[in-house]
Amino acid sequence: METFRRSLCFGLSGGVEVGIAFLLLLGAAVFAGSEQDVRARRHLKFWNEREGVSAEDARGGVDPNIIELAKMDQISLYKKAIKHYDETIRDYTGKLMKHERVNGELRKKQVVRFKFKEDPFSVYMEWVKNAGSADKVLYVEGENDGNMVVHPTTLFGLIKSVERAPDCKEAMEENRYPVTMFGFRRMMANSLAMYEMADEKGELETVFLGITDVDGRKCLAIEGRLPDKKRYDRARVVVQLDVERLVPLNVISFNWDGELLGRYKFSDLKFNTGLSEAEFEAENNGL
Picture 1 (cartoon, rainbow, N blue to C red):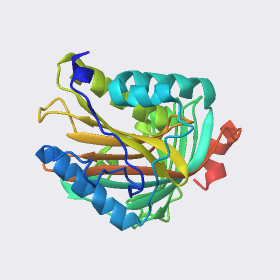
Picture 2: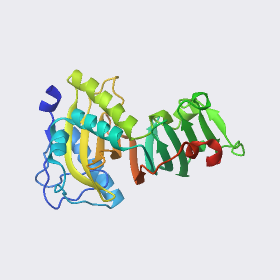
Picture 3: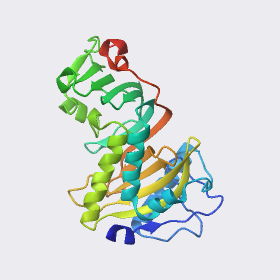
Picture 4: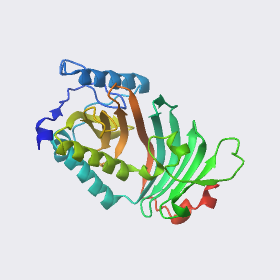
């Protein structure tokens, strides 16, 4: 495909320091590159210093076929990851750190504990840092007339819970995406759809950034770049994809001015714990 004939593949050199965000080549092996490459290095260096975490080149033990897809065919990599997810993952719990720019304003970094079940699509989130107008959200597809059940933190916080549409004005004033987009599968499907549209138009550029580390998990660091056109909602998106589970543990997107649009880092993950439907009933979650 034209896209991948134009893809860039960055090699690795031993002992390279990387942040929890992504592997960045800093020595002579780094291309002088375009303005985008310089901007990428600046952002990645920022998170390296901010997080104070490093990882070595850990190519050993990683399926070379997965590495090849990361280098040459990220659309096929996403398709493989979604297929693997469908075959192996039913539910999971964990913690999400999200830092978003909404309506042009960079909001405070938030930390959310969550539990998620794929069938039926069920999400419970509880904010543990910097909650907005709600500190608990429950959504189960097909229930509550399609609404979320939320616990408000405003003056009406004494109210146990209220129902709101997932894409209501209040929710979208504080979040880039509605709760219906939560989870690894829908996140990857969203990126895949964007990649396929851009590839069809010959507008997608992909970059392999190397093998990195997120909380002790080996990851493929991949990047997609898009032109400044109305059909795209981001200029660049960089993903750290767990090489074993093939789920995105860390995702960072930027606009065309190099500003952060959103960062989403998953941690404390436990998969296939056998979450029951009762786990997603309002009364069992203090709602």
